[in-house]
Length: 132
Image (cartoon, rainbow, N blue to C red; front, side):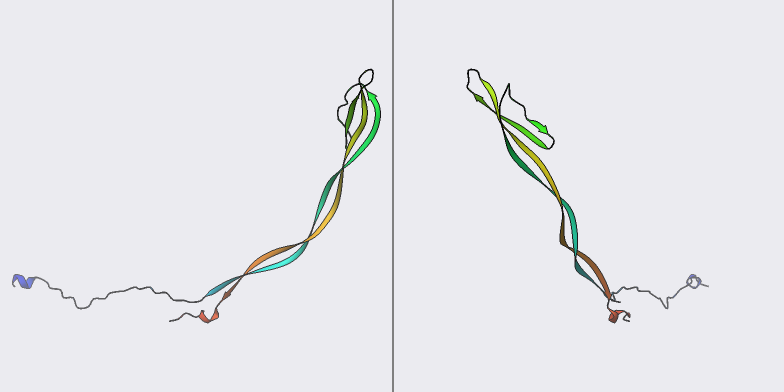
């Protein structure tokens, strides 16, 4: 045997190859819709309103000195004085201004518009079966 006969020779006769590919395929569609609904609803609230009453009360008497403003319940009393010339200077209480705070409450009813949204999902049945 020669040296070339001792070598083993291998011949390639068949080779298999695998190829992988991706493709897009639509299998169905979905549609989302938004709807708004409106409804009226009555609402109630308690409202309060303040008013001021001004009352002038004539007094016409002499006092020894200025009278500070005072609070008589819900009424603020402001004393108005004037100087009167006599043999001596004396203070004369001319009038009192009385300011009274009044609070009134009442129920208020009104109608407001309320909105609500909902989403409806629909599937297109024509594309449910996959295409080959």
